[in-house]
Image (cartoon, rainbow, N blue to C red; front, side, top):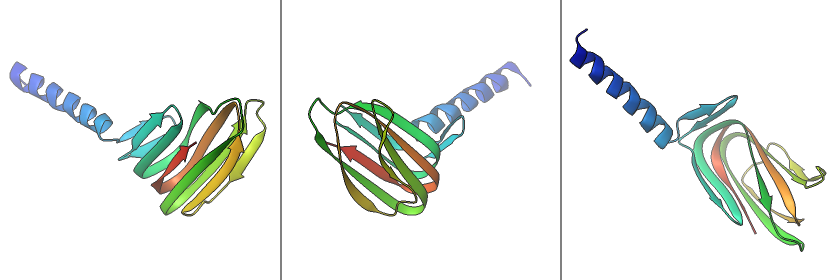
Length: 128
């Protein structure tokens, strides 16, 4: 293989990996994401995707007083579960195999939100 072909091949491979990451074709450890679009705000977290398998989590601060947290889950196919813990590690919400639903949960201070999915297509939104 001459130098020009080798350089072209390297550029094509790098472009492939760049586009895969840019358009949501990623896999980290045991979590697989396909066409995954995520938004993280100060008082919100949401994602839409074609496939999510594995778990993702985020720590969020909801304030010193009790706040109403609104959780929307959209399920097209597959399974998704949601667990929310307070700063002491106590579970304040736990639901598995969630179909398209909305939940209202009260919490304050630091919380940890964990999403567990198995071949799930759809999305979620957490906001207050």
